[in-house]
Length: 148
Image (cartoon, rainbow, N blue to C red; front, top):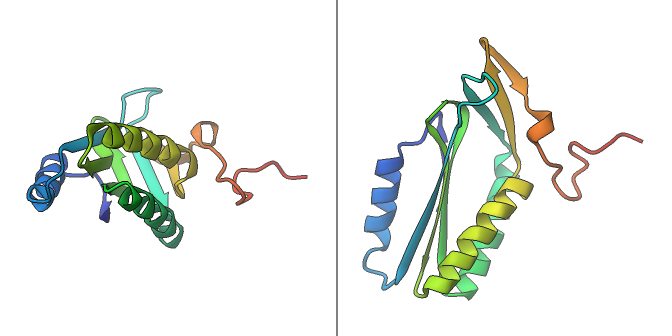
């Protein structure tokens, strides 16, 4: 349910496959979220590093939470370079109930932005520049924390 890809995501393929995989499971709601690299600040794209073991543990906690509510969460993310107007992130919730799906997708995407162990770099003039000003510390990790 967690898929990692090199470079940009093939949004139509992933969303179609997820839909086909879950179509017979009696879910009343399928809510996808697609994150796309915006053209801002003169960037050519973004580049991503992922600490996969930590991301897998983080995602498994979300799977357990979704399961308790009768739902399924799926996620795809890019590793490496993703150019402007391409997708680097897809999340989706399948649920028997609309309200559960709406609540879960919002909470999942918000916590992903705050807590997932994924580091973002701007691609500018052929250079890969760490985007510290747009990054958030991972709770309890000390990463990005101030030094004493």
